[in-house]
Length: 162
Image 1 (cartoon, rainbow, N blue to C red):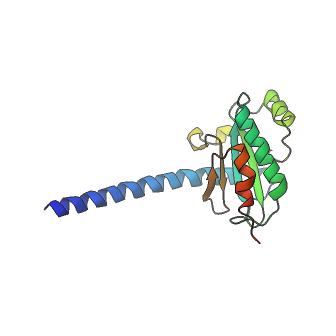
Image 2 (spheres, rainbow, N blue to C red; image 1 turned 180 degrees about the vertical axis):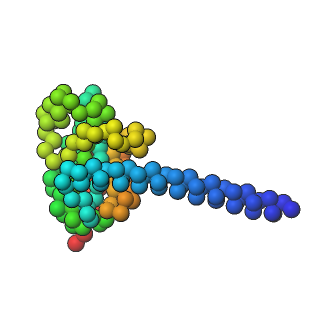
Image 3 (cartoon, rainbow, N blue to C red; image 1 turned 90 degrees about the vertical axis):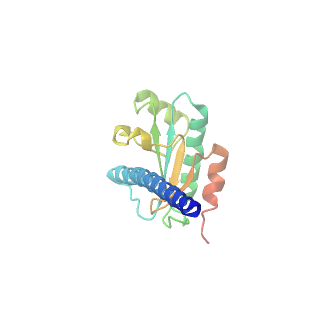
């Protein structure tokens, strides 16, 4: 009797973990699908490319530094053959403050030249946005999340195929 109860508990725990994993995957894929849709609307091809997003606010220097790190990575790896994205990398930026004149000035003054600003943040559910950044492969699988500025270039460099 005791063994049956333990086995039932194991089955219940496994079912709960599988359900939680499935729900997390659905949210991740929802964000990936929304990002690719919004990037494609801008006339930028996303087929067989890594897709990344940075989320930042004007008053957060660390997040603005992350933007610069991802901007540099995009300049270098935009057309590189990468694991999970043989045609390169596309990076977008979402500002928590919304896109307005001040946001655009700060974004450009920081030196971002390759990051693609997404000004339609209302189309993305807030709970789907990462706290800092995410990088997906071309299938929508998350490769990295919440990288620090000094980790970005090295992390993406590890994805180069020879």
